[in-house]
Amino acid sequence: MAATIDSNAVQASKKKHLGIPEAVFVEDVDSFMKLPGNEKADSALRKLDEQYQKYKYMEVNLSQKKLRLRNQIPQIRQTLEILRHMQKKKVRSTFSDGRFGLETHVTLFKSTECVRANVMLEYDIDDAQALLEKNLCTASRNLETLEEDLDFLRDQFTTTEVNMARVYNWDVKRRSRESLLKSADKS
Image 1 (cartoon, rainbow, N blue to C red):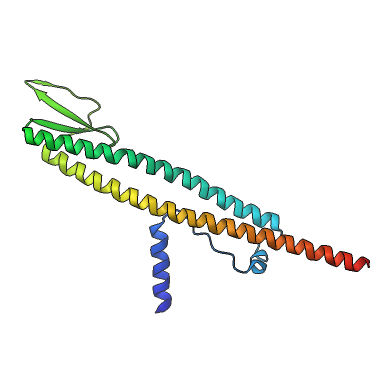
Image 2 (cartoon, rainbow, N blue to C red):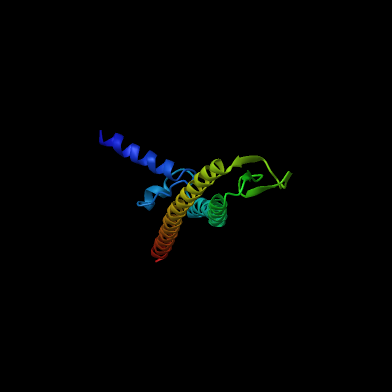
């Protein structure tokens, strides 16, 4: 039963940080160095450095997404405020969702003229407000998830850096022992 709970917790953690592999702490360096592909410290360090570089790449991508969301949220809020103001003034209007859903354009009707730019869909005020509130909620939730993922990623950086240091130190000790043995054999 305990194994099931533990595996469920691990699965939930993996789903929570989907796409970011967890760096496993190398507790026993001797055992780690006996694993296939780790025969030499250089090859083990190279693999750890590759993993570290992957984490760096993920960090850049997540940081860019975070920046986009941090810019998008105020725009959505501003558009919602404009919409609420228009509702108070009883302006007849529809809202048009921009090309990729990142911008919301207002379409105002004056007499029989209609001005539009990059319109994909038009919404009446109530539908536009519901959509914007949903988009704001989604963007805020995504920003929170990204921040959690970035925190998790920082933990993976730290674990990988510690693992690299432990393997490097293990190799220094190994070479030192070999050097001492060679010195003792010559005497």
